[in-house]
Image (tube, rainbow, N blue to C red; front, side, top):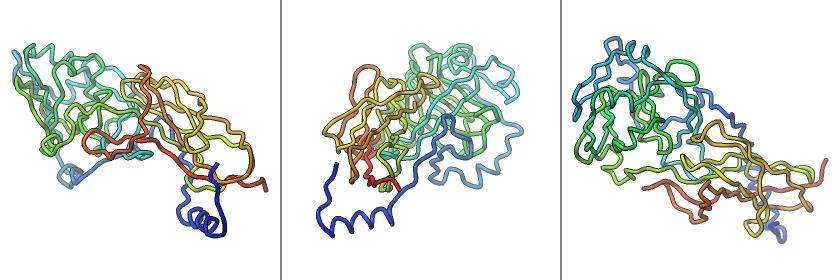
Length: 322
């Protein structure tokens, strides 16, 4: 418990509750398409919205024996699969909202590369978007069975802002590499740095370990000594083993209850029933551990260049029940 001394501290807490209080997040297990995060930076320009896809084809080129030219209808006739995958922006701050979860449907990139006869010694698979954006992943990663070229999102055709007609969904790496509006896929025998990598951002872009408190909201006034703390945790392809919550600013930790994730590649929900010892001001902190036993670091860093690190915390005031 935090201790407030005197009128000055009381006034500070009053100010925080009055002007900075945040409501709880009502996070859905599957994020509705209109609520799925978008990082724009001008890419969703009028050009993207007005593109005529009536003659769209996917071109698979480069270091392949049999280049492929696949119209949209041909792609949709191919064997398809669905995958629940959480995407997160590499700039998502500690406790941030640029993370969402969806069920994607599309075709296997591995199967297309095998059909085209991708050179086994090639290094990169390059995704090229309709707006000129590019990024790449290693061929070894592209040949994983869980990498998807998606044309549906949560049961409907991809919305334009989420990559219609086709986007990459690569579990375990940050959203910038899950390229939207794909027009061409090139197999390259040399290294390739995409738009963000040329600006110093991580090329591997492996999703880090995170946990977030969704309820209560920051600086809320809570009534009663029985409370529930809940939120999400995510570790990309590494998975979550454990989530711990501290109600005394990180001095002592208690294990939270975990819901089963939808897949190996999605966030999960956690909760902890909190028997508050007495009324007062508390700082609540959360941390996660992945399946390998790696504990989330408390060291705070911003997103650049590898993704943000640090523990999410909130301050609340518990008062006697009305």
